[in-house]
Amino acid sequence: MGPTPPKSVKVIAHIHAKPSKRDELEKVLLSLIAPTRLDEGYEEYELFVSQDDPCHFIFIETWESPETLDKHVQTPHFQGFVRRAEELLDGAPQVLKLSQLG
Image (tube, rainbow, N blue to C red):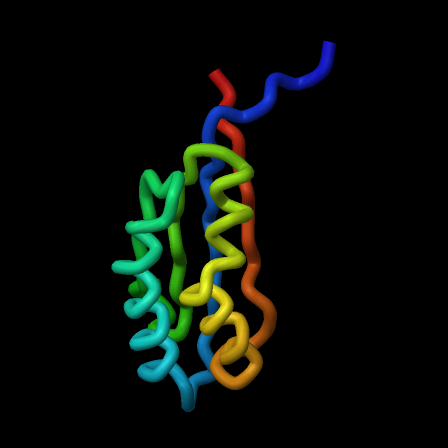
C-alpha cells in the first residue's frame, strides 16, 4: 500500500536577497501576491520577512493540489520573478513542498 496522494500542498520558500538588491526584491515579491491569489487552486499565499535578517524572505503557501502548484509556477507573473532571480537573489531559493500527515 503506497502513500495517499496529497489533497493539498503546503510550500515554504526561503528567499535571500543580495544586500544591495533587498528593497528591489521586496517590491518584486510583493507584486506576486495579488495575481497569485487569483491563480486556480490558491488557498494561502503569505509573504514574511525575518526579524533577524531583513534580506531573508519567506513565502508560506497552500495549494489545492500538486497540479495547481505546477500551474502557478508556469504563470506569467511567476515566470517574471524567475527571469529576475539571478539579478536579485543571493543563492537559489530553498523550497520545501509538504504534505500534511494526520
